Image (cartoon, one colour):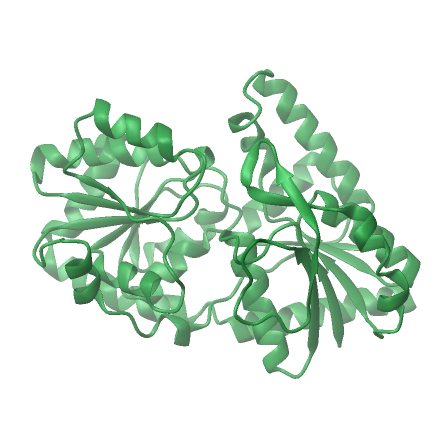
Length: 386
C-alpha cells in the first residue's frame, strides 16, 4: 500500500505523536509498504527525510515549541499527490492537518482515517486558563464529535479512550490500536556513563520522568512525591528528561519546596543512545499524567528494564493492568511515594519487576501493531470500494 500521513507535529519536535508516527512508518516501510508524511518544516531536520514533505509553517503563540503549517501550501500539493497512487489518508492531529488532510482525501477520492492521540477535555484548560473549565470541556467534546463525524474510521490507542469517544456520542467506526515499540532501539544504553556525565553517584537512588515538560503531565505532583520520599530516603533524586512550557513553573516549585538537591532537569535526550542510557540509569520510572491516551514512555522504560510506578488513568490503565513490570499507585503523594519506596527497598521485588518489564515490553511489538494497522487500512478501503 501507499499511505499518505498528515500531522501537525513530527521530529525534531519530540512528543508522543511524533514517536507513534515514526514507529508505524518504520514498521510499515520494513514490511514493504510506502508511507509519505506531510509535516511542518522546523529549523532543524531529522536524519531520515525520505518520503517526508515539509510544509512552510509559522510559530504557535500559545505554544512556541510547535509550528502551524500554512494550509494553502498543502492544498497546492493536490495535483502532485494525485500522481502518487495513494490508497488511504491517515491524519494524526486535529488542527491544520485535519482540515487539509480531509480536503486532500476528498479531492483524491481516498478513504480517510484519524488516530485520536490527545485527550483534549483534560488538556485545553492548561493553556486557555481564562475560560471556565466546564466551557472548555463542552467545546472539546463538541469539537471531537464534529471532527470524528467527517471521517471513515478512527484509531484510538487504548480502550479507555475508545470509551471516552463513545460517551461523547461518536458513531464513526473505532478500532483500538496502541503504538508499538521497536525493542532493538532500546537494547543498548550506557547507564554508568549517564550517571557519570551528570554527576550521579552509582549507589544514589534515582527515579525518572521522561516526557514533555507540560502542565498536563502532572509533574508538579511528582515533585510532591519526591518531597515525601526525601523524608525516608534523603539522597533520593528525581531526574526530569524533557522540555516544555511548564519548566519555569516547576523550577520555581523546586525552589519553594527546597528540592534543589533532589531534582535534576536534563532536557531532551537523543533517541539514539542518550535516552536509553537515562532509562537504564534509573531505578524506578515514575508517571502520573491524567491525559495520556496510551503512555508509550512506560513501555520504553520497561523495555530498558526499568520498573514503573504509575497511576492507572485513561490510557495508562491498559498498560498497568496486572502490574506487569511495575506497580500501580494512587494519585496521592504519600501513597505514591510508598510504592516507589517499596520497589527501592525490596531487592527481590525490584529484580522480579525488572525481568517482568522487559518481557512485557516485548509483547508491544511495533511490527505486530503495524500488521494490525495494515489490516485496518484494508478494511476501511474495502468498505469504501464496496
